[in-house]
Length: 296
Image (cartoon, rainbow, N blue to C red; front, side, top):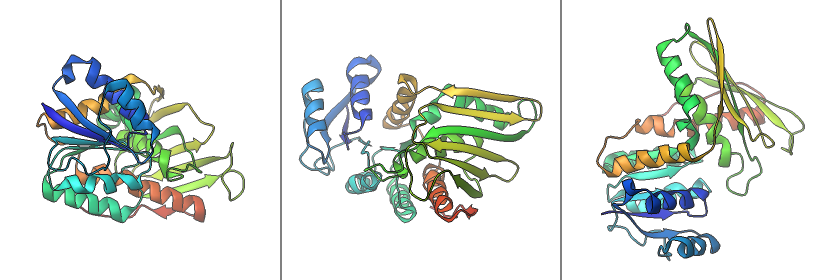
């Protein structure tokens, strides 16, 4: 059996992943030893629905698992909860945002790399079929070279779970999955005053070497969308937030449990953290901001 724990189970991903494990024969060899949250109610609900043990501490099963899922809502609880398990060298699923702090993200990945922990996760929406199609078109210069792109996504600037960063990785990673992991600079133009209120939107420009991608993010935007402009065509797709994207991310974790290679590099995995920080700096400064360089 592949023994795992689910940490930060206040996120809906915990319920979805447990349903996959309990209902899909493909995952019948996965055993969930326990679930943990700093909040009282979510583990109780999962215990009642799936019979899983409620963990008293997030490090309760160190040395006893084959993999760890961390879907905590607050990005500051991702490295914190996973750090005790890193020395076990087990695969890890890390929900968005992987981290909030750039320094913590680098520290996390360096330790994971040194201990042989394979990592996956981030935004589930990168698994959407339209995102993957545009990624392929960018890579293959379909209908000519890429001239630019556009992504629309939601944010929750005043979220209790890390504010801007709670949802921001959806925008960042949709864009980076399709158009490239390492944009150079960010510019952001916000409507309304300094405080972020309902109805306010931010227009973002991510500058790459050969083109720019425009983003529109806002608290009242619940419709995710991606488009690409080539030399001869403009093509866009609705991004569907449904079972297939969650299954896509869980399948990647399951494959790591099964001994498969990591899907992207450690540097690529935390690159969205640096883009999110650059976006927030640009929102606050009103100026073009460089995406900080880093290494792992």
